[in-house]
Image (cartoon, rainbow, N blue to C red; front, side):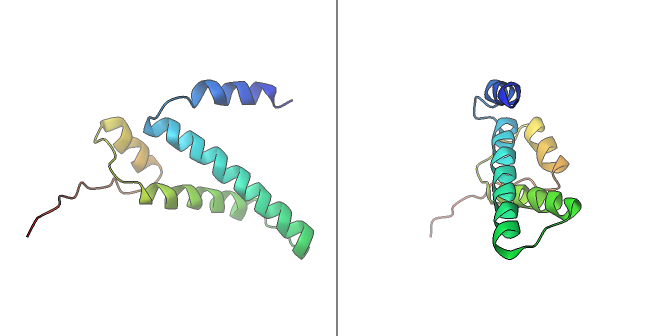
Length: 97
């Protein structure tokens, strides 16, 4: 059942571009979110609604993207950051005193 999705992911996630990094991050955040939801249902007998669950995953992706540094200043990268609502990291220079 998931074999087609696995093939698609492996085909589209090879490489180190920002787009591919976001794809890998999205899968990791989704798996983590599902695992946490599973644990909450089993151990706390609580269940999260669908909308907050999806928002939590998206927020985790945004939070991780905000921590990224040394991003190549290409238009595609800027568009991706803007689409996710994340400010593009500014380059900082080190000043020796």
